[in-house]
Image 1 (spheres, rainbow, N blue to C red):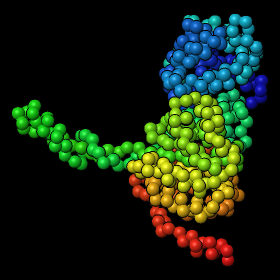
Image 2 (cartoon, one colour):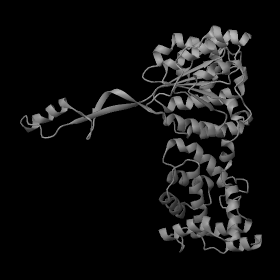
Image 3 (cartoon, one colour):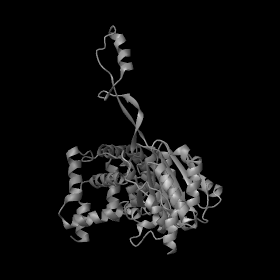
Image 4 (tube, rainbow, N blue to C red):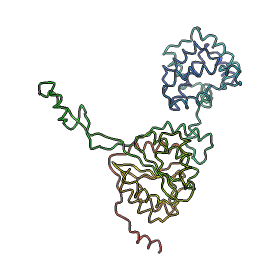
Length: 435
């Protein structure tokens, strides 16, 4: 189908039908970017435009926001998707933007859209039935017409699809604009961690244990005769998460985005302790908690004296084991160490402290941004010393790796991984290295 035929096909639609189709596509774009929008909300938005018109961009956007956004955290995504989807081809007038001119349609279609807006108040055919809506949605993506395929390609260009390419791009290659987009996508990741069996029990309709106290209390209502036996079950609680992040010079291109990642999970999970290290360990839990991300990162970079400096992983882990382990490694905590493994310290000290840390925690996970490269091999002295004591060795170089990490944390089971609990013979290792 030629471009002229496709234009005739688009222009030959019923008045208002093009606007309805664009609104349905807009709802699908919002859903693909994490905003929960139902078809009923889209139809409410279309009905609202019958009363306010579509000439004024500001009023149009306010109506869309009121009808389609139900959560406060979805507002930044909605604003960005709206601005990219409903783009005016002419500059805004003094009284506001003219929303009848869209970037994805031609000038003739823009004029017809203006005519549609005049008919919105009471034109026939504007209130669509549910069967018509379902037919439009089906025809939009399942037509065998080559012209429809071209239209779907144009739609994919119009929609906010840059997040797909951004998910696979390495953090070190981000531009400033992409960093801001990545921050929005990070905020929409769901962070949950596997649960542990608590020593406490809670009431349950079909529990394994008898709740004698509640049974006796209820029996007082029936002259001391228990008519129903109350039951309890084991309570499950989320595990604590400890994050230890390398902010040395070799990690400088990843540090700020990784701190944003730590800030996100710390404000999403109940029990998170955050530490950073270069040549020494610094606790930053309180600095990152309940602060805007830019303010938190600025404060961390000003308070941490060894920011973008050298790296002594062994001494930093030793400081954690001696000062913080007994305070925070309780009840089956999971430890995340984020580092590229470049270390100027003693590898034997690192191995000894990693062995001690592994025995103290429920699971020890090492996240390495260099692991995203297919040619990477853990050949540095630091990684060689730490590898025997790592339960999970995972990449953390792009948004896809963070999604995999979120899935991995949520699936942590109740059984510890098989570990090498026998201490290393450091004298034998030193002799073998000398030979």
